Amino acid sequence: MSATSHEPDTRGVPDVSGGPAPIVRGEPVQVADGVHVIPDRRVELVPNVGIVVGERAALVIDTGMGPANGAYVLDQARRLAGDRRLYLTVTHFHPEHAFGAQAFAGEATIVYNRGQRDELRRKGAVYLGMFRGLGANIAGSLEGVELVDPDLIYDEEAELDLGGRTATLRPVGPAHTASDQVVLIDGRVLFAGDLLETRIFPITPYLPPHDTDVDPSRWIDVLDRLIALGPEVVVPGHGEVAGVSLIADVHGFLSYVRDEAARLRAAGRTGEQAAAEIDRAARARWSTWERPEWIAFAARACYDAAGRDV
Image (cartoon, rainbow, N blue to C red; front, side, top):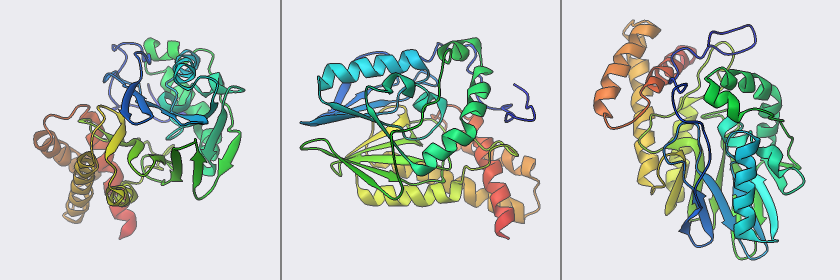
């Protein structure tokens, strides 16, 4: 889809138009005591969805894309939680993670950090239009989407006492977006959203001049802090549930791109030249990872950031 005066230019992003519809399906899998994940099955634009059940309440983390996916996730949460109070939060505002929230309106207390709420208001309609242009399979899932505000917003950190289980919601952006949020369950299970993907190159939505909020250097700093937390179970935005080594893997890639972009800029390469060199080297070095189209986006973000730091 070409850029308009209102929508980012998505040329170069992975072509998902021929893939399956982004439908959340399958039963939740328990990854820790009381912590369940509906796996993404490595289907494009399907997130890993979390359902955390305590003695008194349950928390849903991410909804899938569109009202039908949101309704399916709500049904699975009700099946696990019974008549317990429900909360919903999302790791960030992007459509496949947050644009099923309308199914939870009136059924759950929706909790976002202030930056998430603001970013949804600022960019939600633009991203809705942009994603509809990615293919008929995507547009169908977005039919009837309504963007809903949270019931509660917080600033620095929020704790949800679910009864014998505590969920800590913490804003960490800008990184992948301006307002990324991580969710830590009992200090052991980390839901990281698109700060992490398993065997997928980090999704770096650097789309100047419309959306340049992605910040790879700060993203690396966030990953340092997540490694220090030492979670036992790590749930990425996409791909298989893993351990803390996944955080180190993504940290290594982003650090490589940042350092190479700065080196090549100092050596006089243009942004296109630097991105091409980094792309070739990264494809060889991380040959088992999927969606290499995102390498060039990360390289250009780091290259431009290196220029601003001079």
